[in-house]
Image (cartoon, rainbow, N blue to C red; front, side, top):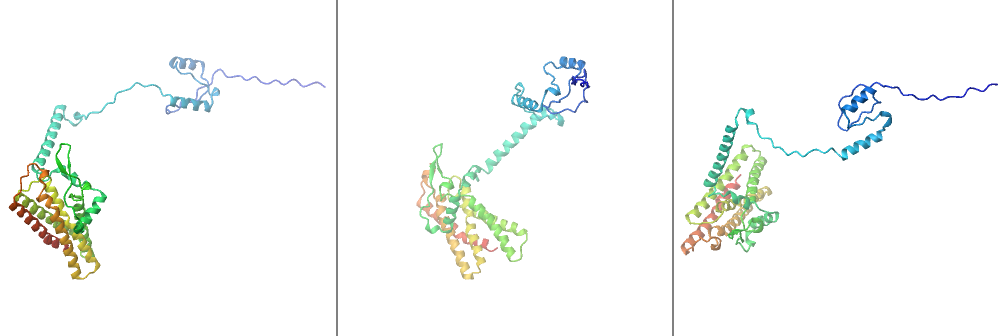
Length: 343
């Protein structure tokens, strides 16, 4: 019996040329397309066109090698020269305006704004210095709580003198409200003013007669009372030759504290109290507000001479007139508050 012929394994052979697959769309940076080995002619062209890159055949690479190449590329980006930042300038020519006309317009606008600021500071800065508004809003939570307690219960307060500190220029100035409980502020009067308008509208709604115009009417009435009170005190200080820094803003602040007592009086009407008890509550807040203004405005009408070097010695007659003016201002609060509580 003859033996079978020996087995011979075929020897693998590679074709001399494999056609290139069709081109793929552009891919993001760092992407490498794997393909078969190029032909002899294409290999020479690629080496002449891109000598810095080496073609890697598909059968000699692996996905793990490709991910490592991407990581190395992200960790070591190619060096790019530093380019200075460029701020684009407006192209006035695109709007049909040449550069000369545009520069003239910008200068004219700047001059108009500066003239407007100077006009406001010249005509209104003497009455209401805008720089002192920030001072009167510098409050804290502790100040608001203690100030409301002071307005409602002024009988328990002892010291009414305002604290003074030296500025960087060496001038004596009053401390901010958050540092001095006796300093007037604009936060509480403003919040009380808005609360009064809302409570007036709420009270009208409970009586089934609410209308959006009530908000405007309540705001107008409250603002009219504040303006009348401000003008009365401001003109009185002018006639009595009272000179103090931040005088107008202080007067506006003191004119708004009456809304605190008015709000509590209106809220007491919701407790269905008797008319006699309601008027007792009203008179209590009237006397409380009157005493508060009488003691607080004293620092404005009778200022400390140490705060102003130009303050002359007040004669006894002028002092009596100023004290009488304070008593009249405290008595006028009765008419103001009676008008406001009738919502």
